[in-house]
Length: 119
Figure 1 (cartoon, rainbow, N blue to C red):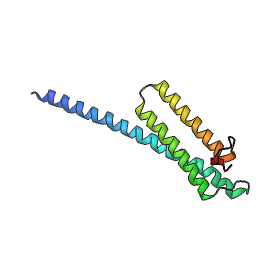
Figure 2: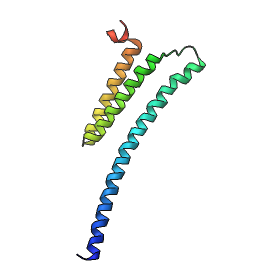
Figure 3: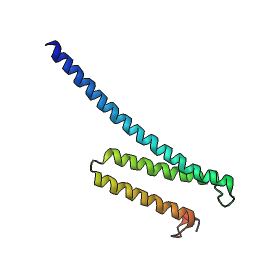
Figure 4: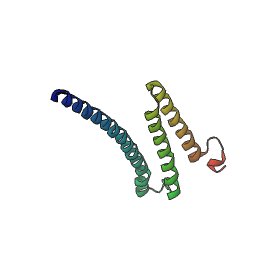
């Protein structure tokens, strides 16, 4: 083997490693963004509670909303990682967001009158 061919093999291995490393960084960056957005969304009612008595969330409310947001975010991330077609990804993520909104509305105001809303 020539020195040039050994160098090319080494360069190919480095390129493959960098591509997989960048893919891993991208996945972790999406997870970080999901967690950051959830934290910001949970800060909105927390900050509002400091200025008005109309917003009165308990720790249980924050816990439930955190669980709902985390599960929706992580399920969307799972869809983004496992589903290959872009159209299918978009449709599934929209379906997950609609399901989240329906559960959130039901828990908040009891539109459907299920036991979740305390009816």
